[in-house]
Length: 187
Image (cartoon, rainbow, N blue to C red; front, side, top):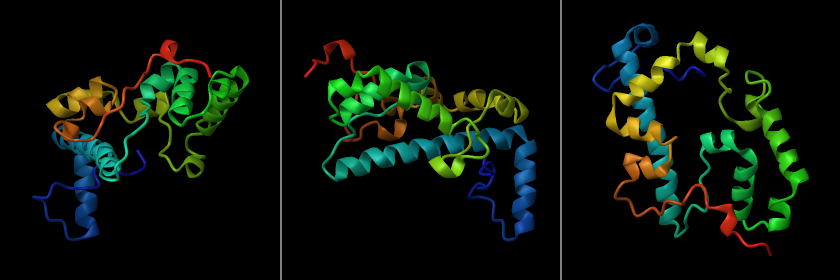
């Protein structure tokens, strides 16, 4: 998990030495109650990052043209490449070109082919394979996220901004994720 798990103790704990921090981390990694709290904290932090992007874009007088959800990409990468291209103003001839869509799909697959070796290329954390998730017992994370109403809603929506509690009541315009392609006219 790129060693970010259990790194931030609750504000009520004052840890002054590295030994105290290490002890807290070890306890957190072995205590279900602390790990649940860590899960909710990280979920809230990720929702905050998403909300921050929307708010800053709105403060600059702009909107988010398209916000791709990972689940949508995993389900139909070609449709997501088309949606991203169209949001960027790329013409239909390019966004509908089978060869270009195939190239983009293969490039995205190549970026994640060696999850523990290529993180520097994309500046993302490693891609968690099923085996990695099983080894780290990640199956419990969804349950812990569901223990918090805001995180539960965000999880069930695939992390959509419409379900981000930190954006409710915000003046940040939320884009539609999957604009129907049938209504897009060819130029």
